[in-house]
Image 1: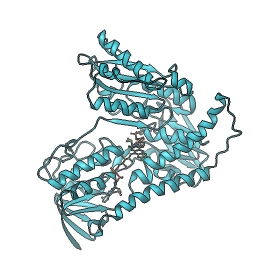
Image 2: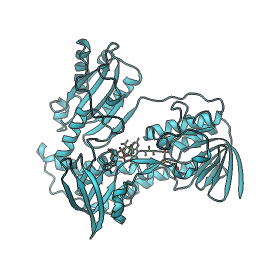
Image 3: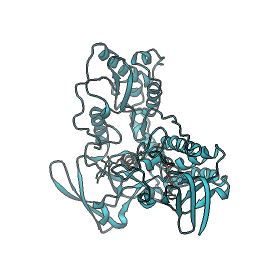
Image 4: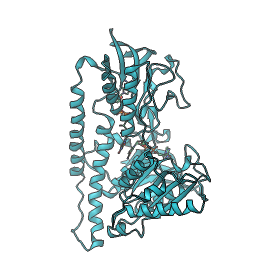
Length: 477
Ligand SMILES: Cc1cc2nc3c(=O)[nH]c(=O)nc-3n(C[C@H](O)[C@H](O)[C@H](O)COP(=O)(O)OP(=O)(O)OC[C@H]3O[C@@H](n4cnc5c(N)ncnc54)[C@H](O)[C@@H]3O)c2cc1C
Ligand SMILES: NC(=O)c1ccc[n+]([C@@H]2O[C@H](COP(=O)([O-])OP(=O)(O)OC[C@H]3O[C@@H](n4cnc5c(N)ncnc54)[C@H](O)[C@@H]3O)[C@@H](O)[C@H]2O)c1
């Protein structure tokens, strides 16, 4: 057995772990980065990048399908699944290569291969070859897809998103379980690429939306385009012939058995904590078994243990993993002189079409009666109509009294850009009035945002509370 004595050990070489390693090193500390699985990060290998590559192909197919409405006819659409997947994989490999080059630049003596688990608060066992003693430790082990037990009998026809990006051709049909972020992004992309897709959601949840009005708008738009079954419970899945027989029950209690080629579990992800032997530590855990941590320092209690990225289960997004990793690594490097790091305004973007986004405080978390809602439908919004992308709804939330902009939820054209504008305004604690003093060009989609801001301004002026406050969006739904 080897023994390694270091100042800081970082478990996991994903986005959070790499940021933590760099931040801890900046203090001149002796740091080791431990990775058990494949290098390259979830984002580049099986997450953000390959999913956006698949969506880009779907966008291209959709644009051809939409062209006749402008009087443009490109001939019959032909989708070459093999070519699509070849591009997804080769571009994905290119992104992974950049990450691997970065990992290679870390001196070999600072990298350790193997899965780590805790022996005590200051020591780790890595596989069966090394004991690492460290003054502080960063847990940055990421997350894994959750597999609902009722899908177990689908056997080899049960997939998770990781496997989609290894396909060398597109399948004929697929059932997507979960109308969350992955379900909406991949489900719609595959549908637009000619795969017969059914998306099943067990409640009315669509991606990160908590505002019932925006949720309804998104459900309507999605449901108009593809087979979306909300409020539908999956009862079981059985390997059957060349596919899967999926047994479901809808909101009216009607049970059905339908045949699909594959089943994709897009039902959420769970933090990678199970094999870390956290029971050997005295840090407090929440009800999911995730170590409790301070979101500004990433410190677990007053220990020398820090947590960052998807494993913390708080904001499982790339830019948050990078921020949390940086804060955790900085504090691990300066431990016990722990400091608060910068946390940004929450920003969530789903790359479906129309895009979905949420900024700042979510509708669900706002205090009923304390805020006004301004809204705009994109149906008659000038630029959106010009581009034939006039679908969706944007709702902005503003605090009564201060007039401060609190947050927004939306589905609509170019929501990724609107969401950034709004997140910047939110982080700068701007009021609706200050936002309306900013320039708006013509004709742009941002004029739709101005309509929503004016609506909020009007309601603030008249002291109108939000009357349709969500009654069913209790936490966790
Ligand atoms: C399909 C998909 C699409 C996504 N799209 C987006 C997007 O568009 N935008 C966005 O912001 N986010 C997106 N995300 C989320 C984003 O990818 C994650 O938030 C981010 O990659 C998390 O980084 P991380 O460092 O926490 O985890 P990871 O990159 O998963 O790193 C964790 C590492 O820890 C290693 N590890 C685990 N246990 C141990 C152990 N015991 N010992 C040693 N090593 C261990 C793992 O092998 C892994 O390499 C997407 C995710 C998915 C799945
Ligand atoms: N654009 C992006 O930023 C992006 C893209 C993809 C993934 N991600 C990240 O990856 C994480 C995981 O994505 P996800 O889509 O797996 O999780 P999610 O939490 O977004 O959605 C999971 C959905 O599955 C539903 N569900 C759970 N069990 C079910 C069951 N048995 N039957 C039917 N529905 C069920 C849940 O109600 C929920 O709506 C996201 O939280 C997100 O942070 C981000």
